[in-house]
Amino acid sequence: MSVGELAQRTKLRHGGPRNLAMPGSWLAGKPVIPGSKAIAAIWGGPSAAAAQRGRPCPANGTWVAARRLACQLPLATLNLRDFRDVAEYHGLRLLEP
Image (cartoon, rainbow, N blue to C red; front, side, top):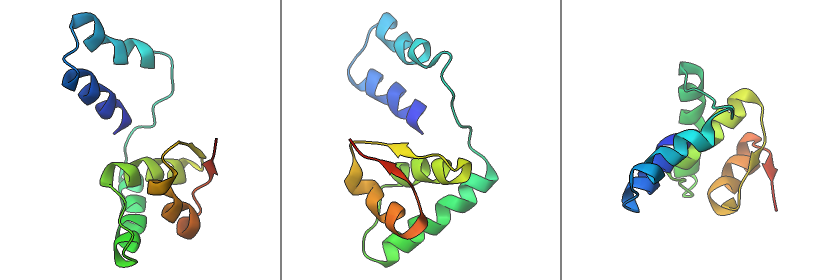
């Protein structure tokens, strides 16, 4: 999801060939957590629960959270609003600025 968002943002900003290649070169050597059935199963829980509580989180945010939960990794983000529900109810560890 995050890699896709980088590619989308670059294209929306009408980047030239050099800028379009930038996300790939920037990500080189950095770990990327691949999707899996386990992550998809984890995603469903927090996503549905947040919606039932009247605090829905955007799908891309819950995918990011599900990957972190599956790998037991904290999430560093400035977008605390979208992730506080998952942290409060599902144990996502947030690294706040």
